[in-house]
Length: 185
Image 1 (cartoon, rainbow, N blue to C red):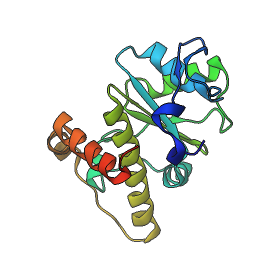
Image 2 (cartoon, helix red, strand yellow):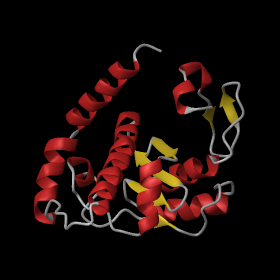
Image 3 (cartoon, rainbow, N blue to C red):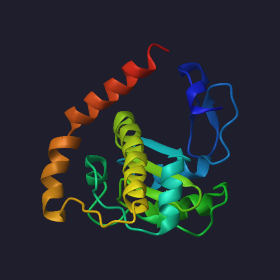
Image 4 (tube, rainbow, N blue to C red):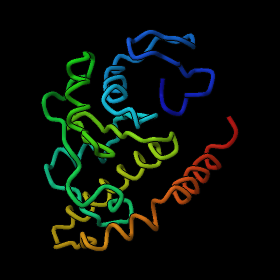
């Protein structure tokens, strides 16, 4: 299914052993990404895995992500971890465990030449963060493509910026904005 086709009726509830507990559709083949992050991080309640074009292109450059935009400040300083063992589909528990190890305690990781994974303690935080990672990747690609020097927020400014922009209330505001854009389901 395409992301735009998902409705509450198409969702599945599963256990960590790949069993569908509730819902009618078959489980997604890349289920081990989600299951192994849930196993490794009990604080996580939502894992987003998707294949956004700008994040895929950006991760392939090998550049570290910088806080060129507000969105980038959510993920830096220090670079976003990158899973590089394979760009193939993640269909085994072993590969899922390696992704869980790669993401570690981070909010997100790039699956180089494949996509992204974002882990959050709420659905709204995970989804808004996934959108922000795609936006940050896009903006840095644009700045890099200019061929000119580009600047970014200094590391010592980022924590204060992050608290103002990405606190629980602000994430919830952005989430409700996206929900209004989608409209009623």
